[in-house]
Length: 186
Length: 294
Image (tube, rainbow over all chains, first blue to last red; front, side, top):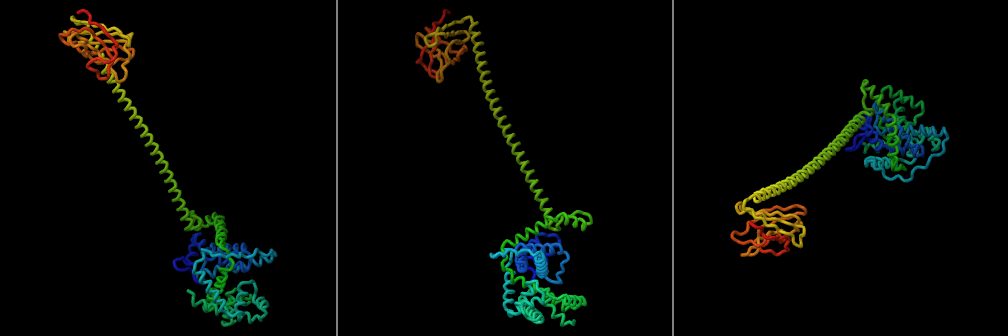
């Protein structure tokens, strides 16, 4: 994903500002990614409050580690999404260990978030179209691998296909997505 | 694993779905310095992160962003002292605001705001004091102006009194001169019905060319009226001799005109006439008397 757009400060600039102690930059980063990260976390946790707590943890980590962020190793969005996914999985495992009751159902009234800029909405639309362009088997394997806490073997078992096929489908799906998205990538 | 085998792992690595042995192999490969795999892994991680975008509109409610910020803001507030200490250490012991530029700006803004508020309060106080001082000065000025007006009135009244006293004194001096004149002639006027307790005397000295009238017991002169003294002569009847005002309980001394030369005065009388006097008596007669012997 690209950092920043048009007159808006780039994600990298926000992180630099955060490293300098600018809490408004943290607020901007939350406005830019909070809702998306919450959706990602909720996909794992199926609980709005837990998901928001995960996102707060992620952004808090970003705030504290902003000084050590290295943009040459990846974009801010990758950093945040990776952190969010990892923390959501950790939380999911912790919840399982506590055998906590199922979380509250996701909120059913999304509504527009004014903090989400049009660019990100457009990007989301592109990604969804790219996903829709994948073969069903590839998309299923990819989404199961990404949006769950299942290992390759568990995905294979879940889909009822050999492990090697899972690897192939996931790799193929990722390469196709990269090609589709790269044409629109900045 | 060879390079191609590692490359085949990159997509799963980007999804963080490698088995432990695969993850170690990739780590070793990258540590060995394979820039190609490093770059491709970076690209695939971007792709993987993009998957999160597909969930962007998937059930996240509008208030999520604000609630997340509230959690973060609470942490920022809770850790402010800690970041203060960190900032102090980084500054080599020199204390700095906790949150870098924002802290500095917020502190500066707070100081400026406090300064502005202080200036505003000071200005308001000064303005209030000036307004009060101005009001007091205005009141003092008005008071002084009022006092000045009073003094002027007092002066006018005093001048009037002095003038009156001077006139009275002049009249008395004149009366004494007349009374001491060798050719003094007196005319006593007795009371009539309107003023039963009144009385008057007219002193005349032809040598001094002076005639003075003194009365007592007359009622105060009504508004729009005047007392008028008459010489009633055999030749021309009543001849106006002079006007005077009377006050309750106070004697009246007033200069009057000499009787017409060569005429025989039969009587003197005082009547109450319209203000300014008249040529012939029209009002009630208060005093009347015949001239005494020469």
